[in-house]
Image (cartoon, rainbow, N blue to C red; front, side, top):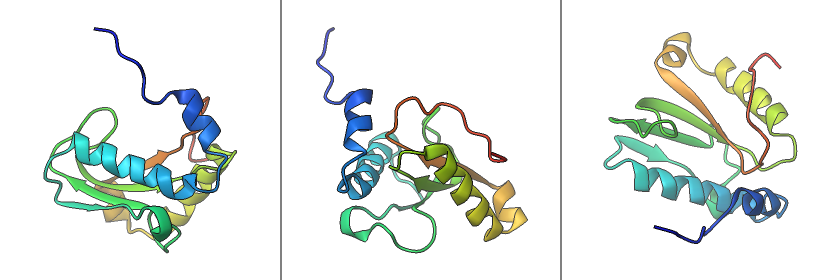
Length: 126
Protein backbone atom coordinates (compact mmCIF):
# COMPACT_ATOMS: atom_id res chain seq x y z
CA UNK A 1 0.00 0.00 0.00
CA UNK A 2 1.41 3.35 -1.00
CA UNK A 3 0.81 6.47 0.99
CA UNK A 4 1.74 10.09 0.76
CA UNK A 5 3.78 11.25 3.74
CA UNK A 6 2.04 13.92 5.75
CA UNK A 7 5.30 15.22 7.11
CA UNK A 8 8.91 14.54 6.26
CA UNK A 9 12.20 14.81 8.12
CA UNK A 10 13.10 17.78 5.91
CA UNK A 11 9.85 19.59 6.74
CA UNK A 12 10.40 19.12 10.46
CA UNK A 13 13.97 20.38 10.18
CA UNK A 14 12.94 23.46 8.21
CA UNK A 15 9.98 24.19 10.48
CA UNK A 16 12.26 24.13 13.55
CA UNK A 17 13.61 27.53 12.49
CA UNK A 18 10.24 29.21 13.06
CA UNK A 19 9.51 30.65 16.51
CA UNK A 20 6.10 28.98 16.61
CA UNK A 21 7.76 25.56 16.53
CA UNK A 22 8.68 25.98 20.22
CA UNK A 23 5.00 25.43 21.00
CA UNK A 24 3.97 23.20 18.10
CA UNK A 25 6.70 20.53 18.42
CA UNK A 26 5.68 19.73 22.03
CA UNK A 27 2.08 19.40 20.86
CA UNK A 28 3.16 17.01 18.12
CA UNK A 29 5.13 14.94 20.67
CA UNK A 30 2.16 14.92 23.05
CA UNK A 31 -0.19 13.73 20.30
CA UNK A 32 2.24 11.02 19.21
CA UNK A 33 2.58 9.77 22.79
CA UNK A 34 -1.21 9.75 23.22
CA UNK A 35 -1.58 7.78 19.98
CA UNK A 36 1.12 5.31 21.07
CA UNK A 37 0.32 4.68 24.73
CA UNK A 38 -3.17 4.18 26.06
CA UNK A 39 -3.94 5.11 29.64
CA UNK A 40 -0.62 6.47 30.90
CA UNK A 41 -0.42 6.80 34.68
CA UNK A 42 0.87 10.37 34.27
CA UNK A 43 1.42 12.59 31.24
CA UNK A 44 2.32 16.25 31.24
CA UNK A 45 3.80 18.12 28.28
CA UNK A 46 2.93 21.83 28.12
CA UNK A 47 2.17 22.99 24.57
CA UNK A 48 1.87 26.22 22.59
CA UNK A 49 1.74 29.21 24.95
CA UNK A 50 2.44 27.06 27.99
CA UNK A 51 6.00 26.10 26.98
CA UNK A 52 8.88 27.67 28.83
CA UNK A 53 7.71 26.73 32.31
CA UNK A 54 10.29 25.76 34.90
CA UNK A 55 11.19 22.10 35.23
CA UNK A 56 11.04 19.25 32.79
CA UNK A 57 9.45 19.85 29.39
CA UNK A 58 7.55 16.60 29.87
CA UNK A 59 6.88 13.87 32.37
CA UNK A 60 5.41 10.51 31.43
CA UNK A 61 4.67 7.45 33.52
CA UNK A 62 3.58 4.65 31.22
CA UNK A 63 2.68 1.09 32.16
CA UNK A 64 3.86 -0.06 28.71
CA UNK A 65 6.54 0.86 26.20
CA UNK A 66 6.10 1.78 22.57
CA UNK A 67 9.60 0.84 21.49
CA UNK A 68 11.80 2.52 20.55
CA UNK A 69 10.07 5.85 21.05
CA UNK A 70 8.27 5.72 24.37
CA UNK A 71 9.84 3.91 27.32
CA UNK A 72 7.88 2.01 29.94
CA UNK A 73 7.93 3.41 33.46
CA UNK A 74 8.83 6.96 34.38
CA UNK A 75 10.47 9.17 31.79
CA UNK A 76 11.51 12.79 31.82
CA UNK A 77 11.42 14.65 28.52
CA UNK A 78 13.27 17.68 27.21
CA UNK A 79 12.57 19.21 23.81
CA UNK A 80 14.73 21.53 21.76
CA UNK A 81 14.19 23.19 18.40
CA UNK A 82 17.46 25.14 18.30
CA UNK A 83 20.22 24.72 15.74
CA UNK A 84 22.53 22.88 18.17
CA UNK A 85 20.50 20.04 19.68
CA UNK A 86 23.51 18.18 21.13
CA UNK A 87 24.49 21.21 23.19
CA UNK A 88 20.89 21.69 24.37
CA UNK A 89 20.53 18.00 25.28
CA UNK A 90 23.77 18.05 27.25
CA UNK A 91 22.87 21.26 29.05
CA UNK A 92 19.38 20.02 29.92
CA UNK A 93 20.66 16.61 31.01
CA UNK A 94 23.30 18.07 33.34
CA UNK A 95 20.91 20.66 34.79
CA UNK A 96 18.03 18.23 35.35
CA UNK A 97 20.09 15.34 36.70
CA UNK A 98 21.61 17.77 39.19
CA UNK A 99 18.06 18.44 40.41
CA UNK A 100 16.99 14.78 40.50
CA UNK A 101 17.84 12.26 43.22
CA UNK A 102 20.05 9.27 42.39
CA UNK A 103 17.16 6.93 43.18
CA UNK A 104 14.79 8.70 40.81
CA UNK A 105 17.46 8.81 38.09
CA UNK A 106 18.00 5.06 38.40
CA UNK A 107 14.26 4.43 38.01
CA UNK A 108 13.74 6.84 35.09
CA UNK A 109 14.60 7.42 31.45
CA UNK A 110 15.80 10.73 29.98
CA UNK A 111 14.30 11.46 26.55
CA UNK A 112 15.44 14.35 24.35
CA UNK A 113 13.39 15.28 21.29
CA UNK A 114 14.42 17.55 18.42
CA UNK A 115 12.92 18.10 14.98
CA UNK A 116 16.44 18.62 13.61
CA UNK A 117 17.49 16.07 11.02
CA UNK A 118 21.00 14.76 11.08
CA UNK A 119 21.00 14.61 14.89
CA UNK A 120 21.62 10.96 15.58
CA UNK A 121 24.12 10.49 18.40
CA UNK A 122 24.52 12.12 21.75
CA UNK A 123 26.90 11.65 24.64
CA UNK A 124 25.87 13.14 27.97
CA UNK A 125 29.53 13.93 28.70
CA UNK A 126 29.86 16.15 25.60
